Image (cartoon, rainbow, N blue to C red; front, side, top):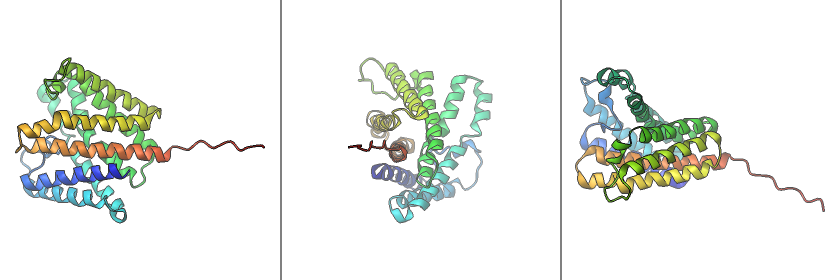
Length: 255
């Protein structure tokens, strides 16, 4: 579980450093602008969020402060998830009602809910609750890939064989299968570890190239570090699933 905690903490702290450097919330994953375009003192709020992420990300690295750090991470990521809520009724009024649109709107906060769930697992959240929440979020990621393969394909390198849409569909199916495995408690640990690997592949093939192409873009950097935090959260989830699975008892010898 150490690797998961390290990545969850590092990704979160690095995202906090970015908020301090840019003096703003990262628009794609911390969409405070969805609450209002006229919020006052967003610069100071971004600095506060950045310091919070750094402190919490560092705190979970140490056993003595892990509980406090995990609670702090759960709180800040829950706030980021809440930023998406106004879009659920504002965006459909602007763009019309479409199931694909609603899938995207629901998937947005799921990105934040995954680390919230992992952080709460570190302070005693029941595995059964975490299992279903993570399953829902993972399935939603898959549905978004399957619903909007052309959009996802824009993030897939042009040199990949068979075309970006195909890989968008394949990754969507993988998400759905992983989510089903979590919900049914069937090969769930293996599914979580493979899912973490898939997230890392996304970083290598899609997210890191965005930073190379736009090295000064806050969103490009933020996407990479949020993805690392999700990798960590998924590994934490996998390891806590392992520790909660009862081991089969050995039959006693009658000889």
